[in-house]
Length: 143
Image (cartoon, rainbow, N blue to C red; front, side):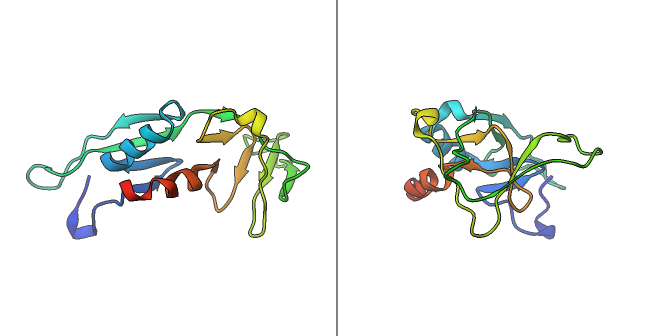
């Protein structure tokens, strides 16, 4: 539900509970960058009064998962989750803090441009996919 009295419409890309809320413009860019990397679900846009006549919005997620991080060349914290209450208990966790450096194995990436890494990577509460910032900045003129 979009309510203009509560603020502006969402940007072209907004984090939304572990997914992204994206505009039609962003969807076109993503499909052009790496169509097999994403899944899109259309959103039913509603407004408090009247009808919505704006752009379409989509929930988007990166569905390609690769085991591509070169742990020996990367600079980050690698630990095993020891909180028994966590769903990740006993599993490896990557923590990327300021100053971290992620290095990926090109052989594991192949032709992929966008992907999630196999182990949970936490940075500011969001999971990252590699190459995404570089790929998006290369297509910045489309947004």
